[in-house]
Amino acid sequence: MRWHSNCVTDGPEATYPKVDVVIPTYDGWLLLERCLGCLRAQTLPHRVIVVDNGSTDGTRANVRRSFPEASLVELTTNCGFSVACNRGAAAGESEVIVLLNNDVEPRPDFLEELVQPLIVDASVGSVAGVLLQRDSDAIDSVGLSVDRTLAGYPRLRGAPAGDATAAHPVLAGPAGGAGAYRRSAWEGVAGLDEGVRGYGEDVDIAMRLCIAGWSARAAPRAIGIHLGSASFGRRSIGQRYHSGFARAYFLRRYGVLRTTAATRTIATEAAVIVGDALISRDLSAARGRIAGWRAAHGAPRRPLPPAGAIDPTITFWESLRLRRRVYAT
Image (cartoon, rainbow, N blue to C red; front, side, top):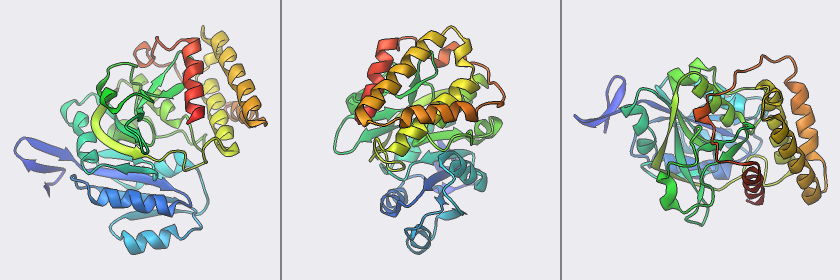
């Protein structure tokens, strides 16, 4: 393949937009090294932008030494996922922004497959890649599905890899760990909400893109292996606190407790808080929700997303089952 002025081509019928791959990282050099090595093998030319959140493990020096082709955005402290991704996106100028977690190992044709829906349909604002679980043929996620309370779930989690083409559950948008965004769509909604450090920001931007009239697609052949929970640690206090923070923050921003889904929302959140306290023997989930609700005070109210962004088949009991599955992995 060779670069043209605004695209890449490998023949008269195949044109590809320029791509910026934004990878936020914090003290995760060993994971990042594997991720960057996989990106070197990609079939589609691209620019890598590593955003270092104030790492202390030598990440910056290692990137400069081992991957000099990568651009490095250096933040002085750990500003969180949303800020890091926004800074990385702002440092690029390509037509497509790909967000990739440092704990994802993309297959060589990942980027080439991921951008295809953006090429063939100008109404597509975002594309979900397929993440598979480590040492398994099971799906970790193919984007996100969202219920009436605006809670997001890893779509198709636990299903066999062959089900990645399934039309249901409804796709709301890509998961933040492996998704592509048309830059004009991303900039049109001002990127990720920096009111949260991590969790829920991918659901939120998916909703805002739907509200703005953009559609989302899945790229079932854009496959990566997700090592999982590398940022906050699996079921750590930080993970559960920040997840709870983001959940309450966005509930307030969208005014969900003023809708017909209020009763269900309260029941679901109460069940999650109690269950988490019993399992973890602390109140991190509750404390995070209290802090997130307070943080959203005074923030402009967002309109609710269109019905097409919501999966009506996710019932109250199904939502609890999906929550349990997330917590168990």
